[in-house]
Image (cartoon, rainbow, N blue to C red; front, top):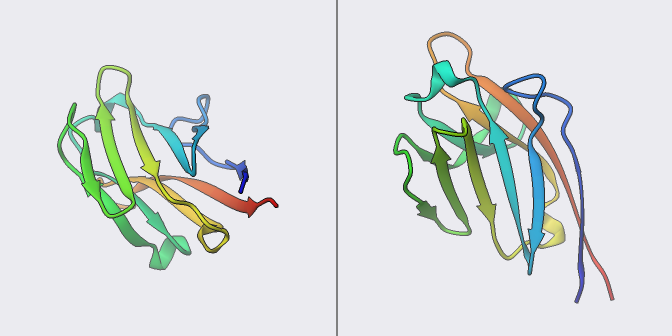
Length: 120
């Protein structure tokens, strides 16, 4: 079955550079940018409303892939981005997600609205 994705990205951790998306097989790769001042901070990907967002994967490591279930996360401090790979997508994965950076006070985050449609 072919897989179709639509993605809306209303906010950004670094306002001039919104996240990007690429599709491969039945997965998606979401690249989230962050301000360089947060290069040592933990990065994470979560689902749900921001106030109750449940973490799907998180890391404080850089230049090393971290895996958790259907998710992988890689932090590239040189480019000031972190990449989330989300595998084996289905329509049930449609919803609101956030790329987040932990910091003192409210975390910095980017909202990612993912719509997964499987074709015939």
